[in-house]
Length: 514
Image (tube, helix red, strand yellow):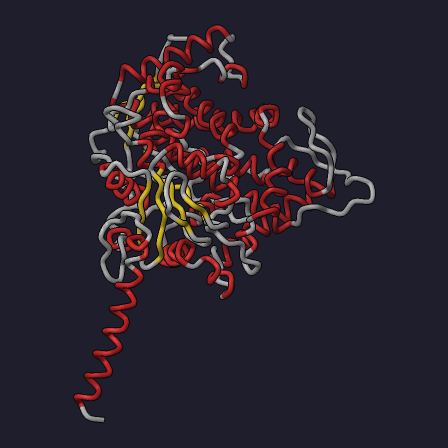
């Protein structure tokens, strides 16, 4: 073949590919929707793909770009895949409530080849509704109170650890200590097991739990396909999680359930509540219940499903809670007056309660709750909420048609750092969450746990866990930033919002203040 012919063929192929990309990148323009200028072949995701910017900061950047143009929504290209990004809070609220049927699913897909993918986040349609209805009773205030003793047992160990650090005048790696604490708490509640991460940082449960969110190349590829072609993952039977992680948690849960069912062993935790669901036992508001299946009924939940839900509870309650606690304590070290006010509230409540930390005492700590809420506002650990358009949708007050299958992203990070709702948004100010200030804001200006029917069912448990850990620490210690701590940066490779570097904290014992 003549060289000229070869060059001509290459030119035609390259030209055709170029034209396809150019056409793809007119998707939003053809629909009259603004989008940032895309770059072939990355679309708008060049910095995200290069990991120069986390997804939280990337979507905040796009959110702000759209808001600066006074637009209620805009478009984005993740490679060639169009993404719809609403910024108007009324529209976001309508999409997640009144028009929920159009955006009822998340983009994750359940994969029959990967049991851990069958959790509440990945379930769709009626299957999601049925499972959500089964699991919701496991997170009522009475069930949280039931698990309070388990959480407190491990915060007492945390107290011992910090006392030891104090005695040795050692600084502590804040995020590492919070991870070890929440892993111990949630492994006890989600699996009924003692991980002992506080005493043994190399705990297997901690190791496998952290790998769930580890930003490996595999996870990055899966995440990309979760957004642009989730059904291809299912079609090709690509596992969301490595097989050894799945096998580890399946083995842990199988042994736990066999032990409990064989020995009729009852423990007040999430595992027991799942066992009740498995055996069709009725979960009442205030009782623990038995293991006996309802007469003539088959099991309504398999071991794989129980494991998937437990692992989601485990990783969601450990990594995310640890991140929020880390950012909250970090901010308190920077603002001593806020730290002192929170400590004073905790100590006063303890004094009135005979020095005992109880479930009821946590309800009497409104200022501490404001501090935690402000940490979740400034550092939303879940920085975006993803949905898939499940039914063609006409955006209200416009002619814009969102096609079925389009990905929708709500930028939690963008909303939480929006100066329209939070003046001076970079400032840490718990009083943003006073009753007066809350009433003046749109209810969707604060969405750390999700939106509408898809809101995290365990958020009240998470708040209880974080309040207990914070109250335990503040009652006994003062915290200050160690000089070896670098200026705070967010990890650009992490899906959850987490610090890039270690945050080192000095601890001082509080004497005679209760």
